[in-house]
Image (tube, rainbow, N blue to C red; front, side, top):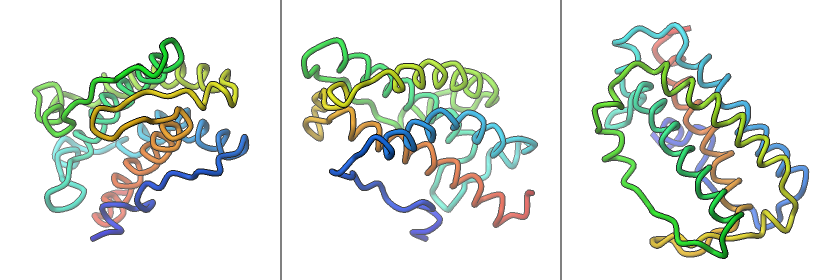
Length: 174
C-alpha cells in the first residue's frame, strides 16, 4: 500500500540543496501541467472518479487539489518574497477536495495550472540563493524556507501524477 500511496516515496527535505537540485525541482514544477494533462488525458468520467487506492482521492479530485494546493503555494512564495517571515493561512485540503467545484470537469483546473505554473516558473527561475533562504511561518508546522517549500512542491508535482499513472497502469487504462 505504501508504494501506491507514495509512488515516489514520502517527502523528505534535503538540507544540502544545490543550484542543480533547485533546477531539477523547478523543472518538476514547470512540467507538472503537461504531465498531469497526459496522466488524465482520455480518461472517462467514471475513470476520473475512480479512487487511485481504497480511501484515496480520484484523478478528478487530485487534479483539482493540485490547482488548489499550488495556487496556495504560489501565494506563499510571493508573501515570503515581499514580507518578512509572514504567517501564512493554512487550509483543510480534505475540506477543499469536498467542495462542489472539486467534482467539476478537470479542464478548468488544468488550464489554471498551465497559467499558474508558467508564472511560478518565471518567478522561481529568477530567485537567488538568498531569496530561497527567505521564510514564511506556518501556524501548524513552524518556519519554512522557500528552499524547503520548493522541495515540497517539486515532490508534490511528481507524487500526484505518479498516483494517477499508477492507477492507469493497475487498471490497464493505457
